[in-house]
Length: 141
Image (tube, rainbow, N blue to C red; front, side, top):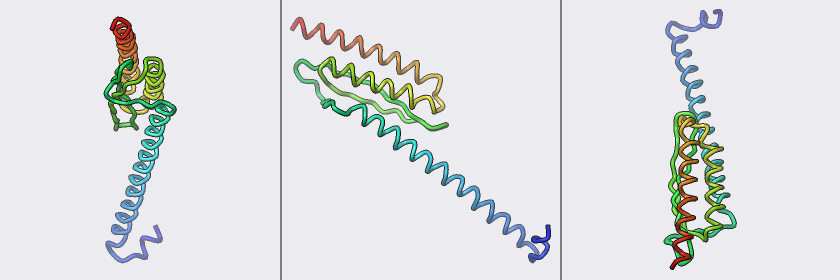
């Protein structure tokens, strides 16, 4: 190449190394920025699930207690968050459905793509059954 012929000995190698470092460094920076944006969007989705509901812990009289995990990830990294809350039964069902929908949307982009929907649905159904049992227990108290 004519441009490399005009450079002193070894300068072409240094130039190639510097350009490669800048390129791959920029690529890593871009992937990190993309992951951070993705994480903010997923966390915002979870915050929106809690909108217009006021969960609390521990459970008060007439409330049901729920424990649910949410998942999100990007390619080879995933995050699991445990949610423990107490609400009246109908509100707990609403929040539980929203959190499950979050899992079915955001959990599909990580390496656990095959596992997340199954685990989330089983956990969702288990918590719905737990809510029904807790409601039945409140009726007999």
